[in-house]
Length: 383
Ligand code: 13P
Ligand code: SF4
Image 1 (tube, protein in one colour):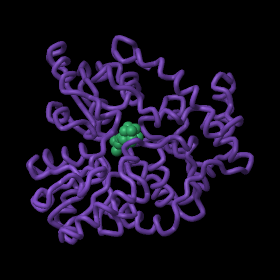
Image 2 (cartoon, protein in one colour; image 1 turned 45 degrees about the vertical axis):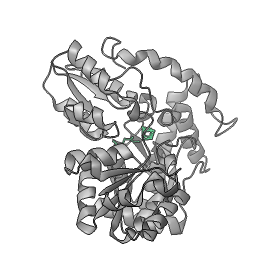
Image 3 (cartoon, protein in one colour; image 1 turned 90 degrees about the vertical axis):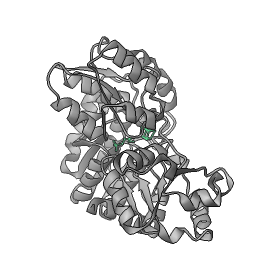
Image 4 (tube, rainbow, N blue to C red; image 1 turned 120 degrees about the vertical axis):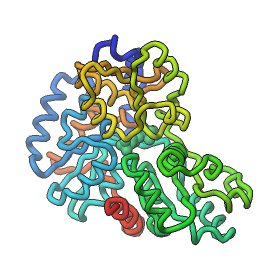
């Protein structure tokens, strides 16, 4: 953790107590106490005992106490690639959220088991699109005669059911590091894109990277009849954006950028593309977590950065770059609470269970869903 002067958001450290009260839920009675002084030694011993039978993948938003045990750290794209490339480890322990573990299960072999240390580590954005809603949307597009020219592009941050829908209808998955490529590919195949479930990533990519106008993007509200859109709005749209968002990135504001620029005139602003359009357009650099890390790390000593993404990553970035000043962009934004669910007690519990021959919290996508999801994921990896 960096010094308080670098990270104004340390006031949020109190959040840990809320999380503690929720921790016992997913593995009642079995979880080591967070206060156990031997936790670190237990994690080291369990990992050593499993040796090459286990591969631990860690997303950049994970806590330090967990990320220190990851064999590979990365953004969602890099971790999906790592899962696809890894054919020997018997167990993949995924320190991230549910949709990432599902994707890893789809991309790994039958002989491999994917484990999510806490099943409550979901993603509120992924939950904003369910299969029934997406099927309804597609049948509305079919009724209007536009489905045949529409290519679904689904963000990695979606359930396997949504990925399966995407594969079934000839679309692709994308992540924040390849959204532009994915949209360009989709427009080479069709005239319209249905972008699920993050409206911000879809809009930012379509407008900023592809030069599509804001007027050509419409929002599909799954809670309203025909998405809350008129027939002509649907027919005229180039991009139909699902009404979903990230509850963490959606909170960054343009006002914090303006305030930073007044306080520190040579500040550079870097944000994740899940942020709102006005935030992304006001920033100097936009990119996935991997790009944010690379850009800040490779910048000249003395550079001052205000970073708009999850707090665990920003704190680590500040600690790892003592020759730069790294600030958290907005003090009203906090950790991703579901990413934070994976803590050392859950990791120790999952690893020690494996050592004792018991597979806990396995994530298994059914064969039918996995088949179409894999088509869409392979399409992304092929791009
Ligand atoms: P990336 O890992 O693609 O940068 O996405 C960030 C995120 O929100 C993951 O949940
Ligand atoms: Fe989901 Fe946002 Fe958390 Fe990523 S940061 S897991 S998109 S809620």
